[in-house]
Length: 125
Length: 106
Image 1 (tube, one colour):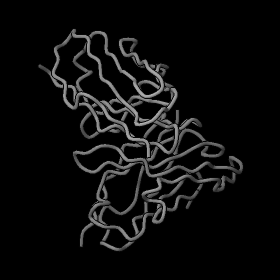
Image 2 (cartoon, chains in turn cyan, yellow):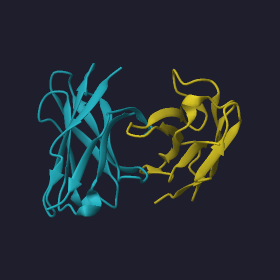
Image 3 (cartoon, each protein chain N blue to C red):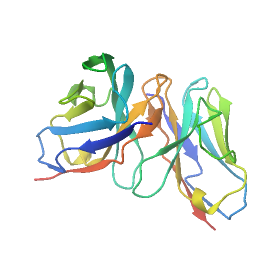
């Protein structure tokens, strides 16, 4: 069973770009579905989007992406920066983007099979 | 967007009780529904997928049912470890979650 771990800056200034990386261990990220979900403190879960990774075990590459329409204009998901990692970028952030961000492995149908532990990102000047 | 509405928002129950949580979709999602359990400070844990399929390793006291727009999660005999918040998720279109049901000790 794969394990996932989120990493990235914990504090981001308003109007800047939030960047997170999910490191996957115990398996390859190739030919699978990977997603990002967030949860503001004390609130519910919001699906941000997912990426299908194509390529090979040795050289996974970005495949198709699907984003939440409410965030689509600000979100980019990609493979990398290193092997067995995938990334999230959310630009033009505001305080409303403050949340715990989770990465997850999704089944092809779309539910989250395995989740990272989550990382709190705060948007503040 | 497909809206998911869970009820109740909070549920008080005792160890050994049978409890049911309901999730309603704003339009038909066939059986594309999952249930998760979340404890404070932890990531959600998958319990049920495809409305009624039990995830491997999840105790059989958890069960799910429903199709179309109405779904239920049932815990047949509450155990101390079950007190947590439960979320439903539809994945018919882009995914959306219910607002959560907090299961508290009575």
